[in-house]
Length: 279
Image (cartoon, rainbow, N blue to C red; front, side, top):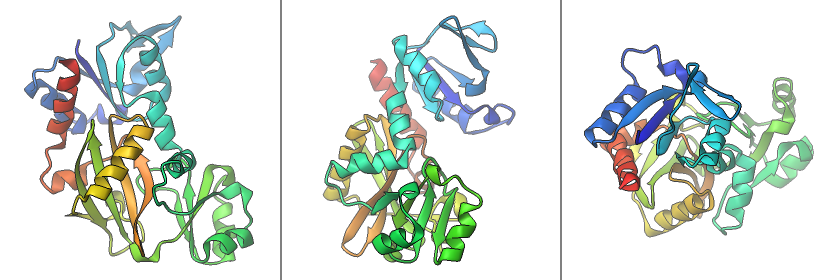
């Protein structure tokens, strides 16, 4: 078997869905592939089982999810993973990612570990409002825009502060960000995501997508971040500062609806890359 495409098992019950469309794209590229769902895997005595049947491992696994332990098992047994367990862990932890990007000297949002700072200290460093964000979140979930101490104390009642970061609020990027998508060693494009109803630009929060100029600077910074994360297929998000773009976060399981809307054939790009690895 050339390829396993692994999705969350929530897709398994749907008649037609992104998982099955990805499998059809693999077939178009003459890649021998199987579609699998992460919750059906188990490991017993160093053997991998799927729906209680022992597996014969493929050459490559393309994970549309974040099952780190499964990737670690596969890597230990010689399987090429997209993305690797290191890449998933590094990108999933926003605090770690910001510290890593700081070593690249790429401008980024000022970011602090929330548990280490009081409200007054946060205001002193970041001003008001500031952003309180879940360290491991995605799709705009677990994000609070804090305007005063009452809002901050109210948010603390619902969260574990140890799992959060605080960031400077970038007024010039209200409801807007820039996303680049990297496949292999190529930045395939950039889009502006914009939401008029919220300070969060995510499509899951009601945002829309527009083409954005892919400059040399944007290409270089995105590739530096991709290389530091040791990623294969990732996206990188930037906010719009007074003096240029600021790194916001990277994603290893990024949605690509915003790029598909703009005419990019994302599944074909993914499978072209995987076909190249197989060859």
